[in-house]
Length: 468
Image (cartoon, rainbow, N blue to C red; front, side):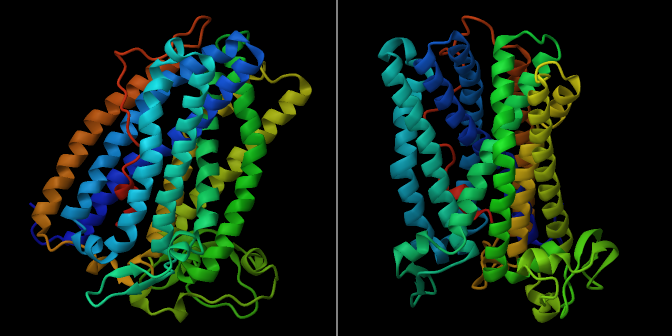
C-alpha cells in the first residue's frame, strides 16, 4: 500500500500525529494542577465551601486528563527504537541523562503524591492533602523543565562534544541544560499552559452562567479564569516577543520562514500579515504587508536590514508555508485571548461580569483556543527547525531508522485508528463531566474513575518533538 512512499516522511507524519494528540494533555494538566493547588489553598484560608466544591469538580477532570497524557506519551518513547533509532544512538548520551533526571525528580514526585491527591482528603487531613496537591503541581513544572531543556538543546545545542563514534556527549552539563533558548521556551510554555487551562475553566464557567447566572461555583471559576486571561495574556505576548528575538539570534532561518522573508531587505523589512508562500518560486504571493514593520519588531529600527532565505542554502530551508501560517495562527489567537481578558475587565468594571451573554459566548468560543495555540506554536517551533533534528548538526534524514515505507505506514494507520477510538472516548467523557455544573457537596474522584500514578509525560517522547 505504501510502496514508493518516503519512509522518513511517514515517520515524521507518525510522530507529528502522536505528538499532536499528546501535547494538549500536558499543557492542560500543568495549568490545572496549579489551579487545583490555588483552589485548595483558598479553601484552607477561607473555609468557603465553594472552593472545595470547585476543587473536587476539577480534580475529577484532572484525573482523566492526566491519565490520557500518560497513555498518549508512552507511544512516543517506543518511536525512539522503531522510527528514530539513529537519532537515539547519536544523541542518547545527552538526551538520555536529562530524561533520567526527569524520571528521578518529576516522575517520582508525581507518582508518590498523586494517589494521595486524588483519594486522600478524607484519610490524611486537609493540610497534608494540600502538601500532596502542591507536590503534584510542582512535579508537573519540574517535568516541563527537563523536557523543554532537552528539546531546547536540540534547537540551540551547546555544551557538547562529538566522540569517535559520532555521538553527541556532554562537555558542560550546565551549558547543555541551560542552553540559549531554554529560559525563553520554558517561560513561554508554562504561560501557555496556564492560559490554556484558564480558557477551559472560563469556558465551562461561562457555559453554566448562560444557563443560570446565580451559580456560585460557575461565578467563582469564571472570575478566576478571566483574571488569569487578563493578566497573563499580555505577559505571554511580551514573552513571545523576547523568545522571537532569541530565535532570530540563534535560528535565523526559522524566523525568516515565520516572517515569509524569502528575500533580504537592506532598508527595512515589511511585516507580511497574510499571503501565500510559494516555496518553489521563493516568494509570498498575494502578500498584504506593512512596510518596515518587521524590522521595527525584530531590530527596533524601521530601516534595519534583515537577511532572507536567499542567504541560506536552499537544502537548509524550513518548510515556509506551514511555518508561516502556524505562526500567524498562534499570534492571532494570542491577541484574541488578550481581547477576551480586556472585555472581561470592562464588564467587571461595569458590574456586568456575570450578566453579559456577549462575554459568556465569547468565552465559550475561546475554550479550545489555548489548545490550538499550543499546537500552532509547537508546529512553528519544530517545522522551523527542519531539515534538522539537532539544529545545524544532525539532519532529519540521517536520524531515521532504516525501515521500509510499508512498515512505517502500517503502524501509522494503526495509531490513527486506536488514537481516535480511545481518545475520542476520553474527551467525550471529560466533556460530560464539564457539562454538569459544580454543586454543593461536590465529591472528588472515586476508585471507579480512571487514574494513573505516573509522570505527566514519558520524557523520551516529548523531547524528540523534532520528528515533525
